[in-house]
Amino acid sequence: MNFREQNDHVVRGLWLLLAQVVTIGVGLLLAYRAVSPEPAPMAGGAAIVRQAVMPDAGSNTAPALGRGFRAVAKRASVSVVNIYTRKAPQRGSPSFDNPNRRRFFGDPEENTEGQSSLGSGVIVASQGYILTNNHVVDGADEIAVLLTDGRPLKAKLVGTDPDTDLAVLKVEADKLQAVTFGSGEGVQTGDIVIAIGNPFGVGQTVTMGIVSATGRSRLGINTYEDFIQTDAAINPGNSGGALVDVDGNLVGINSAIFTQSGGSEGIGFAIPSHIAKKVMEDIIQKGRVTRGWIGVDIREITPELAAELRLKSPGGALVGGVIRGGPAEAGGLQRGDVITLANGKATSDATVLMREVAALAPGEAAEFTVMRNGQEQKLSIKVAIRPPTPPRGRTPR
Image (cartoon, rainbow, N blue to C red; front, side, top):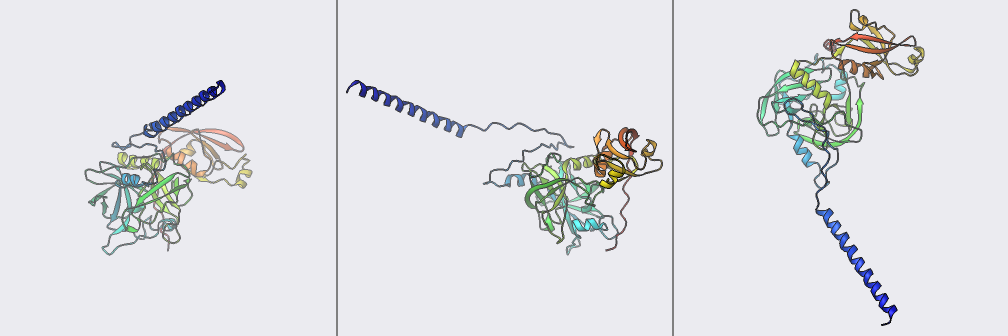
């Protein structure tokens, strides 16, 4: 073997050794990745809701397809109950005679035993507090709750808030598993959600969909509307049930469906959990929901009105009237003013203004920015407690 042949033999040996080293290294790296644990996810924010009901934001990341959503359904379903009443809403009650409610909820159906399976509820505290819709228990003489473990319980009505269509019940029982609250404010269009309830009285049912939209209002069914819209199948009987994220955390209380056939048509509405939580806490602690009020009649601003009022844009809320002796009159607000800011928060339309005023603390002064005759003015108004909403008048059918 000459020198060139010897040199080629050595080079081939070195290349072979290098290839073996690389192959072994790659194999070790793949093996390490296969057996090493995944890095721990960053913990989200948490908040205590009444007795140790602890919400978290939830990742909204779909689980492995092999398991589906079984773990989520198992976790959340134990907190959802069926609600029965001894008396269905009758003609003349506010809920029954609201034509918009009949369009969104349909008419109640009585069974042969004289009971009406009117809906669902969510256990929100282990002490026995249950959230549901006001229209589920409206007009009921007696209320019964059926737990997922088969226990039937009598329920006491703690309080209601017709303005948001929410009610709080109380049962006496042990070993209740309360739902964990998620971030209703953090829900976004496209998020996966799961609806749990008792559609048509057939028993607890789980359906899945996505968030179709947020901030839905002007539906004409509640005084205060800020709905999550979803295409998860929601049918009559789901009202008061849970809308949860893919971690099983409550993001909404199922409240209404838009239907022309009486069944789900892919348009359901849920009250965001942060609104439901605030209403629940007020009812439990104070017996009623306290909201701010300034005493004005608010109207939407059309492009034609914006031009007439010399506004640069149609944003804001038009004051159509001021109640005599009310906070707004005392603070200098006048008919024809356009409110653009309420305590520093933009009021893009009348609906937003209603929500912002309701959130103000009664008894405290709030600053309102208004446009009057093309000029900006700032007014200080002492906020009062909003009077109870009067019952709706009877509507012929």
